[in-house]
Image 1 (cartoon, rainbow, N blue to C red):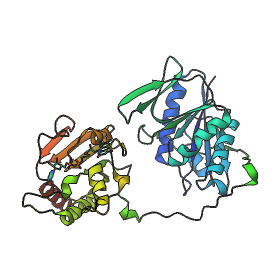
Image 2 (image 1 turned 60 degrees about the vertical axis):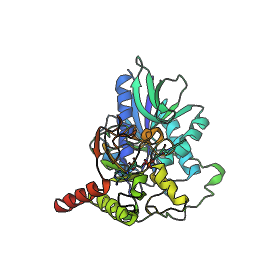
Image 3 (image 1 turned 180 degrees about the vertical axis):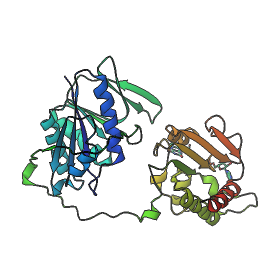
Amino acid sequence: METILVLAHVEAGGALAKSAREALRAARTLNLSIAGSSLAVGLAGKSVQAAADSIAACPATKYFGAVGAEFGQSRYCTDAAAAEALCRAARATLVVAPATSRWNRVLPGVAQRLGGRVDCHLTGISDAGGKPAVSRWFYRQRMEATLTRTQRPWLMLIDPGSQMACECGAGAAAVDLVPVKLAGGGPRTTVAGIREPKADAQTIRPDAPLLFVAGAGWTKKQADGRTRVSEAEKLILDFLKATRASLGSSKSLVDLGGQGQAVLPFLSHLNQIGQTGATPRHAKGLSACCHGEEPHTVGWRFIGERRAISLDPNCGWARGKADVLYVADAFEVISKVNELLAANP
Ligand SMILES: Cc1cc2nc3c(=O)[nH]c(=O)nc-3n(C[C@H](O)[C@H](O)[C@H](O)COP(=O)(O)OP(=O)(O)OC[C@H]3O[C@@H](n4cnc5c(N)ncnc54)[C@H](O)[C@@H]3O)c2cc1C
C-alpha cells in the first residue's frame, strides 16, 4: 500500500509557496488514482504550524513537522536531515516535492540515504493501471517520456508552474513534531545573510502571466543606418513596468555584452531562454526583434500563446512557431503599446 508524502519547506514569512500547493495537487491526483493509498504532509521550517493550518482542509490525514531555527534557512546538512526524518516518520513510499532550488539540491542525496530513487524536473504525474507514473522532458524539452519505478521510496520533484495549485482551505492541523538528528552534532555552515537585487531591478518573474523576450534586433542598425539602444532600453523598461511581465532574452543579445558591443544593461545570461537557457512557463509570450532559430524556439515549449514582432516575415520564428506574428517595427509597436498602457493603467 502506498503512503504518499508531500514534502515542502516553509517560506521565510511562514507561508507555503505556490509551488508547494502545486506539489500537493499532484500528490492528491496520485492519491485518488492509487486504491488504498494514504496522503500525508511533511513540512520543514522555523515554524510550520501556520503553513499546515493554511492547507488543513486538504485530504491529507497526517501532518509531520521538522521545526527549528536551523530549518528556516537553506543549507544542505539541515535540509537533508529534515527531509530524511520527515520521510522516515511518515513511512513514505512516494514523496512528492516542489522542484525548488532548495529541494533540488538535497533530495537526490536524501533518496540515497533512504535507499530509494529520485526523479527531477517532472511535469506530470499519472497512473499506469493503478501504479504511479511520472512524465518529464528530455533533450532540452524536445522529447517527453513517461516512467514508472518499482523501487521505494520514490522521490518526485515537480517543476514549479507545471501543475495547477491546489485551493485547499484553511483550518487547524495537528502537526506531529519529528526529531531531527544532525550529523556531527550540528551545522558547520552559518548563513550570514542574503544579497539580492532590488525588487524593481528583478526582471525575472516566474509567476507573471506574460513573458517578454527581447532579441538582438533591438541593438541592430535600423532603417536610418543607426543603432537606437538607449531608446530600446527605455521602451522595454517602460513596457515591463506597465505590464509586470517577466523578461527573457535571446542568447545572441546577452552574448553581445561579452563581445564589447552596446547592449541592454539590465539583461544577463539568467534572462536567456532556449536550448542553453531557461524554459519558462507563462500563459502568454511576446518576442520582439528575435529571429527565432531552433535553439531559441526550444525555450518557448511551455508558453501557452506565442506572439512575435519582427521585420522579417520569413524568419524561422515567424514561419509556424509563433501563433500570431506582427510584421512591423518593434520600436513603433512597443512605443504605441506603452502609450496605450499609460492611458489605460
Ligand atoms: C548550441 C547552440 C545553443 C543555442 N542556445 C540558444 C539559447 O539557449 N537561446 C537562444 O536564444 N539562442 C540560442 N542559440 C542561438 C540561436 O540559434 C540564435 O542564433 C539566436 O537565438 C538568435 O538571436 P536573435 O533572434 O536575438 O538575433 P538575430 O538572429 O540577429 O535576429 C534579430 C531579428 O530582429 C529583427 N529586427 C531587427 N530590427 C527590428 C525592428 N526594428 N523591429 C522588429 N524586428 C527587428 C530582424 O529582422 C531579425 O529577425 C544557440 C545556438 C547554438 C548553436
